Image (cartoon, rainbow, N blue to C red; front, side, top):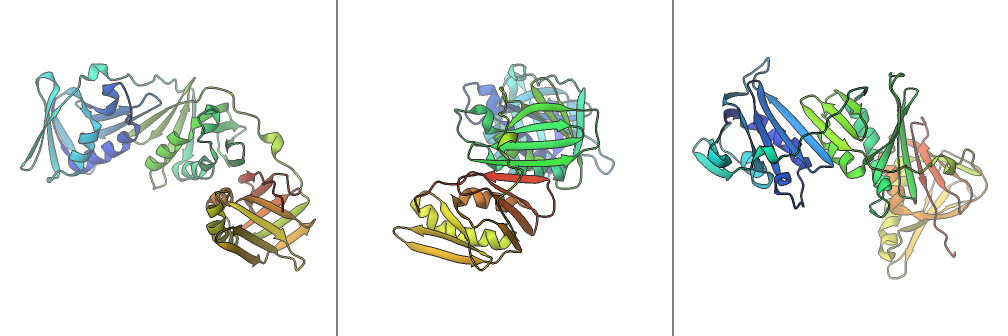
Length: 379
């Protein structure tokens, strides 16, 4: 293999695929990035078996020449060094030549680096995905849907299915759901594709966080291909494969109340700032407990306390309030996670007493819904 390529294009592709490199593995080949040079371009691939990412660099674009391939071929280079070296090369052109036993010579300007390459035949083959079920979604919408749900997955590996986000597509409605049994986040969106439907697709939260990082900022469509146990995301010249989590996701629809004994509408930022201040004390107790009480003056009181530091109390006005008086305690960290992703100036909160789930959603649409279980406290 012998090629010349622009450093920035190569570096961009490396940054994409490196997110799939296995960080801890007993299989040495998985700690590397595979390079394939063909007459049309250079393909980089990385995989940790759960996710695989492939990025293609064309040799020519309508605007410029990106590279030339003198001799086609393949090699696997250890990612740890390859990622850092390419980033720090001094010249805008990079020459890569692979010799006997996959010894690889990288030159750029006056810099010359020799790397020990690995046999590409040992690298895992990418999953074969039948493109029967394909749906397209704007990249910025996909990123928002991930951001507004992924924080609620569990980190407890004893329930693997809950470490992922549930995806359903029925009647043109895309729905993401995540829960760790203490809280729940859901987000829906409408897609104009009524003949495609799927259910119980569960994708690891870690995987979705990595996917969100490489979804382009500009308004581009992402093609999502759903196969038997794999989901493929097509992002321009980048292919992102993810294994689905095994198991059946629990039915969470029954725990979401449809009516409320107490309803509040208030400013999202004002509530977020208030709970953030209360959180400073509550985290010292390792409980994160914050209390919310409705007041006789038609507002609410937010408070928290620490046996060592003291107490914080704050009065907040609300846009509207109806129903029964209320005293409730909840995990302030969970509430702050929700308030960070609410994309509306005002929010609705519904309560059914001190021990029933708290429901939070934007006041101006019903595309997202969040649930937090309250704390049982003695006072």
